[in-house]
Image 1 (cartoon, one colour):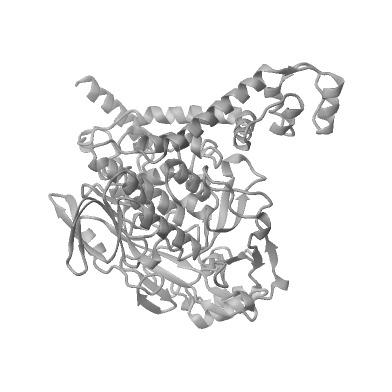
Image 2: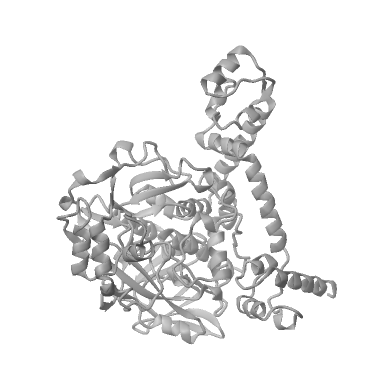
Length: 620
């Protein structure tokens, strides 16, 4: 059998990678250990959230599938951080754990150029440091021009509860025992990571009189720029809020040595920004309580997910912990929490295209690269699928910059800084987050999706029309000036806005915080979509901050434009610090901008390197 591209693993990264590769005209094979686990949500039953929700919008803007899939399978939607600025607003959906994977599997099965195979890959076929295919566990050989590894948490995975260890995947299924050893033989640095999940409890065993309801928003949303809302506000399934108690904390502290992590049974490093409940209580001893959310998993069963209660305690201790929580005194545990350890590669061995530096035409995406989260995995999978296709078709890779996308920040952090723990995307990681908003992902990225071939002409024309409308409305607001007439000042007073003492354009009037874009309709008639109105309002009100961010981004791009030759010998550069020589030689940055973000490379090293490159160019 021969394929253009083979994708190994059917999680969120593998789905996006295989769909992108197939949609770009490549004969693609997706190999997964269990087809029924494709697009599985083994941990939290949600898509989106701070920063992550913006990644989902970016995936949609580029032509990926996750946004469309969750729009068809959500139980509840909320826009987070609405009382804060637009830079940190993000959409979050409770997803149905039955509908979401089934919808994605249907999409994969219907996709032209894509085949699915249930099997286990144990070895890569590599000739002259170039991947040429894979070998299955039964020694079947399948050839290809490129391979994308999206193995999730299945590389030598071990499930742990207390001192009990089981070699398996998240659901007790077969894991991959040999592939990470094969990668090590090929020269990859392998690290051991850990993540975990909370217990699931029966809905009918909860005393809801002791919990606070958390309903969905009273407004319709979609993740995809091309979908209409597919739910009724009144039909959303609520979540509920509770808090840990002093008894919860005492049970955990009294049994800390029985935890897999604190008992010394775990080798891997866990996620700092998504810690276990025992880790929270140890690290934040001054905190009297921690909030927990009771989240529904599906319309088809009654399992409730205790968000924020991840643990690796033994089952008997978990029983006591759960029963110490308000409303859960008599709760029935349907699935006990666990920690899971797995192998991942050092992402410093990757290029920005997500092709490995070790083996040509081998790409990796998702948790194998050291990340956590469905959204981070899907974003990488999409980029890996695009770039594997472009590589075998002799096209330049799509590389998103830090000022263009959270996906760009994610990948740049991985390949430049590396990670020793599961990497989770946070808004604080993006220095240009005011430019990387939920609302403008299509304006930032849809042209890239169109250029690579994943966005249709129709969708691209929709973007062009939106850009035109934004420009025309801004021009209109700048062209109309109002004066301090009685009726105008009376209207402004009614909005708790100060009276006019002189003439002012509607554009400048809109800069007042208490004035909204819809208030402009009092002065002029216009008919634009809500998306256009939102863009204009944000651009006007945050104009100064946006201009400042854009100027800072341009300064960064100047550094990105100073390229570094691939074959440069850093040891020949005089006065460069020894740590800088080691880090630069290992990571091989593409340009001065990337070099400046490497930990251990100081500003003085960057100045020396810049001068050296200028001399090098002058002597050519």
